[in-house]
Length: 298
Image 1 (cartoon, rainbow, N blue to C red):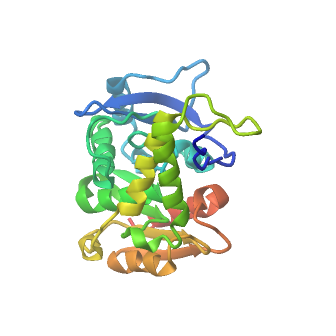
Image 2: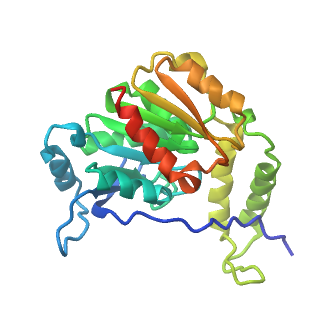
Image 3: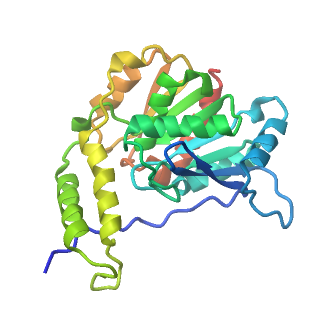
């Protein structure tokens, strides 16, 4: 009998409780639907989330042209969904800002589409979503894979980026430390995708990914072991305020985090004491403080 693949059990986290103004599925040219969530500081009793793109764009355009008119966009890590920023989204909304959570391609509630699964493609996806929403400028907060997307957005689509908080990014795949677990997970999931079956569970009843899910997991993890490949010199023209953050005990080598900060003229470097890679879940308050401190440099 084929061995089960490694089964990832995410620890519980607080999802956003702020008012969900809109829950959209933004259709891209290749058929992918990018799940997009707009959270606002204000709510009306009984108001249901809007599912219409044009109506949401009209709402965003109606926000008075002051500091609150620039939304804060959240981009999550590999295999996650925007809800990992729940506590942070709630806090920025409580301070009067609009938050936009984007589930990256083939993750969360977004679909795969036919385009190549790359960081560059997902950065373009986020750009297209913002353009379809009529967002001319946004503060970007990215974690892990989402931080890579944030760097690519600031580099390749500078017109839409007002500021960037990059948490746990890397420029090359060999800066992740020990990747043995990644290779083992890819191999196990690929095998299960071919030889596994639906409805398998572990001894305690926890579900094992279906063969189709295992194939998706393998593709997502292969992205991490093969990519990114970002030349630090290509970041030197980023001119918006940038915070480059990582945990003190991050899996990404600290030299890599420093290399990113040194490549961007406007970047400030911060390591969160006692934190592992997963800074948004472990120390959301530190992220909130950096988001708003960054605004002072606008």
